[in-house]
Image (cartoon, rainbow, N blue to C red; front, side, top):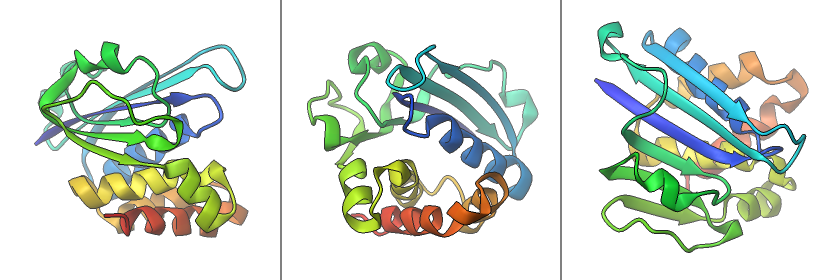
Length: 177
């Protein structure tokens, strides 16, 4: 089993944190092998952020650190949707934060459009946890990780005073259709 995950957003959306949560959940709590690469623009907020994650139960399947053929893609902000279409598998799961627009070039992939930022603001009082709403939705649709593993990773990585809101956001995403 090998899963390639591409996460794209902009600075301030918690893209790198989201990648760390998935990586820790998979490696430490699920006992899988993970490689991860983070890239971000030099701006404090607003520049493109990207995380490439490759998860496998066999270390020999991880032959490169960048995503070359994504099984799952999450776009928290619609940067370069056409550019990234080149590395998505035809049957990839594609999640798009429709708060920032619903236009996309994907026709053969399984596309899920949800306003993660709006949902977080409306249901939790802060768009800062939109990343966890998106993660919950992604987990619900793909089953790539056990929710318990994700919750453990959140409790390890995120400041204690932010555990509950992030777990609520995760569960909000799990409940999305």
